[in-house]
Image 1 (cartoon, rainbow, N blue to C red):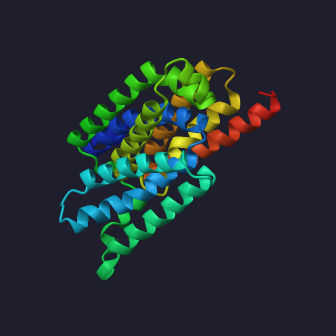
Image 2: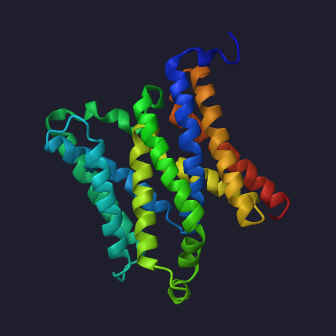
Amino acid sequence: MGIFSWLEYDFMKYAFLAVLIITPLFGIMGTMIVNRKMAFFSDALGHSALTGIAIGVVFGMEDTSLSMCVFAIAFALLLNQISSKVASSTDTVISVFSSCSIALGLAILSKGGNFSKYSSILVGDILSITPSEILSLVFVFCITLLFWVIGLNKLLAVSLNQTLARSRHIPVSFIENFFAVLTALIVMVSIKWVGILIINALLILPAASSRNIACNMREYHFFSVVFSVFSGVMGLIVSYYVNVATGPTIVIIASIIYFTTYLWGRKYNL
């Protein structure tokens, strides 16, 4: 059995192509999410997918992707709005929304004991991805890359000091809302292949690993993408030969990279 024998199968080729699109996407977005201390926010968005699916089921949709995306966008915008106005900490607000969302989704989907039909979304299945679904990932990737090129500096300015950002005529509310919507879209279009339980880990681990060793912003973004792509490709190959789920395998490799870079950074005081 050759080292590239897994590429003989179409489903592995599609999965490999999807990994090459999803992982750089996570690497890019992860740096922004970690910088803005939004790890809990992206996790809550992942949990909201259950409610989005439940809404689609209630309205009799065969494909619940649209209901997932619409609900996630509304969820992200509402969360942004409330977080900026309430006195409680942002983490508390996110926790309340996340708990309510996942409970509502589980309650609807478990009615009549039918939740087993949707349990696969918890861990995802990238091996079942189709060419048309890969195109949707390419579309979101292009939007993200465009935002990263045009809006990264503005987003960093908003993250550091909103008052200063406004004085530089940066539309703070628009930038924050657009970033929240973009995060919601990325989570929703990827969640079927990655899984609700581990999607946040794939967003955060590469960026956190990069932060352990990066000396500047350029290295921070570069290493995040490299670690994310390496984890994705190696996770896919290892899962094929070991015969285990791809998503968790990718997370395990990303976790190993994180602890390795953590120890490296401690050793060299990075």
